[in-house]
Amino acid sequence: MGECVTTASKIDLRRFTKSPILIGLALVYAFVWVWFAVDPVWRPQWWLDNILVFIFLGGLLATYRKFPLSEGSYLCTTIFMMFHAVGANMGYSNVPLGAWVTQAFGFARPNVYDRLVHFLFGFLLSMKCFLDTRICVLAGSISCRWMLFCRTAPRTNTSKRQRP
Image (cartoon, rainbow, N blue to C red):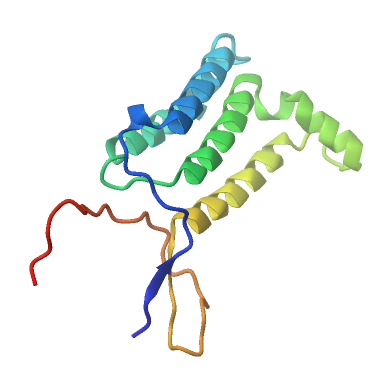
């Protein structure tokens, strides 16, 4: 069958505390999230918007060692989560950036921030998959026809000797 190649940059399996990029992303997101959690427009809607954030971040933390993602993938996730934090605070239809985009590009909707965040979700998810996926090369003449699975690189332990 075909062989599998990776398009991801080298996935660093160091501890979280030894990765300055991951620490920086976590601190920036924590600051943005706390800033926009202080006084949301409507607290019940804010809780509803953030339940999935808590579940998602808990899943990332729980699987960090077994299924590490690349730093680029964590960057894409952080960017999306920051846009989500802003929308959850102000209500997606009240974010000034959406009104500015509507005015600048002449859209018919009064505020397109929710559509911008949905676009970013799809775009950044595809970038995340591109950074962390394995692309199976089918028969020799067909190269990289489909991305079959979005999955993380498996953790390998190079310190153990392999048996012949």
